[in-house]
Image 1 (tube, rainbow, N blue to C red):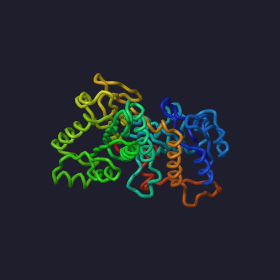
Image 2 (image 1 turned 60 degrees about the vertical axis):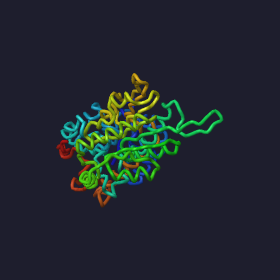
Image 3 (image 1 turned 45 degrees about the vertical axis):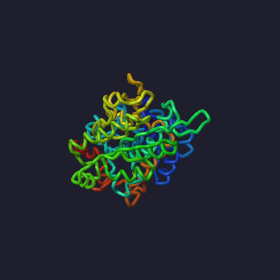
Image 4 (image 1 turned 120 degrees about the vertical axis):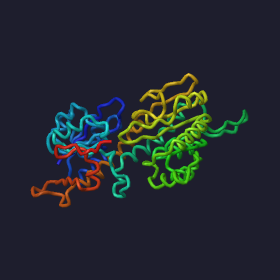
Length: 383
């Protein structure tokens, strides 16, 4: 049974779905692997490295599709590739399922498509397949470095004969995996860090990394609701939203660096920084909008562009930060895919013909959650 690797069809995507190390792991499991020529080049994985790992090289994406039962990709397949799918083939990748316009096509072709973003993150056995966490961790780190490069002053405090250089003030909005890594990285660079999140439980995480929690007054009833839902499903009151906006507005007015990380699968990113707040920020301050690709947390941000406001604030629309760390991002992503593919192998491992056999089980809590098309049906619930 052969697994195929499609080259990314985007000028802004440098990652590759499987690395040479991942090919070796899959070969040990009994799979064959074919990769489109040049698919790993932008991540510094040459075709020769794949060949040394035991993979075949195909000249085109069409050749890969024609040879493979399982097709791996970083993002959704290009339409020119999707049209060549046949019944029974499997597609695995970050398919952006709630915005994906090709799900009906996948279903009509009889392909089973697994969207890795839908992984149930509360399952302990699924942690090593969590692509969102593996990519967000690197993105949070790189976001701080991007900010440091854009900022015209140093991050740490310096004591010099010419005077004291004050440390940079960094504000992180959204304290998930990316936000926590951003806090840790900014602290390592010597900045003073503040952070905010809807989840009350995030306060302890922020403070454990040396950051200051931007506290918003909360009624006892609201605190209980937020705690019970983990913050994600909590709908704050109108008063709480106003109070939080005031706290964030004040923090951003004094900030040198702001990094926003809030994204909601299947929806546009929440707007955290409005024009009125931008107008109060200092000239030379920098905002890194990590959600620029899904609508943006910062008003006016543009994906993959850096703009400067009338009052001298630089807004970086960081739409795909993991791609800027393509070698390591690909390595972690490939490990996530290998771990998931392992769950597809039938318990007996081989069929009557002594070839590797798969077991697609939509009742399985992982497979069932990730499968967005199967048996000619779209299985994704509407949001």
